[in-house]
Image: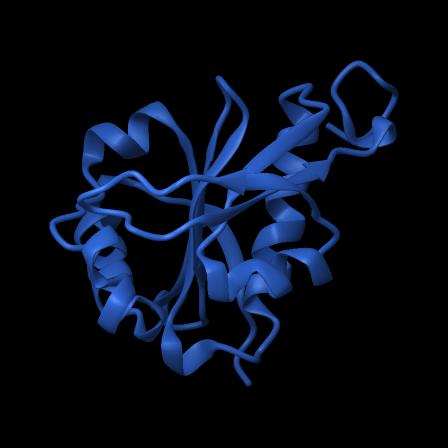
Length: 160
C-alpha cells in the first residue's frame, strides 16, 4: 500500500472530486438520485474546508468537506478501489482535527444509510433521523454527531 497524505483540495481538483462522487458504487441503484448532477466546483472548494487524501502519485483516493456554519460533514468519499485501506479513518480523524482548530464542539453528519456503521465505528453517535426530501431523496437518513474533544479545540490549549 502506498502512503496517503491529506492536503487541502484546490480548484484543479474539482473535476476529480466530482468524478469520485459520481463513480461511487455506494450511490448506484436506489441511491443514484442523490449524486446525479452533483458537481464540486472551485467556488465550493473556496467556501468550505475540503481536504483530499492523495497517494504518492498525487492521485486522489478520497476527500471530505467540512462546512463550518452550521458545522456539518457535507461530503465524504473514498474511491471504491481504495476502500478498506484506512483512508476513510484517516479522513475522519483529520476532519475532527480541523473541526477542533475551527473551535467547533461537534459536527453533524446526515449519513448515506449504508455508511452509518462506518461513522459509528469512527466515534459518531446517532442522534436522530432525517426525513426524506422527495423527489431526489426518497428514504430516511441517519443523523449522527461527532463530538470534538475539548483538547482539540482552538483556544482550549490543544494543538493548532
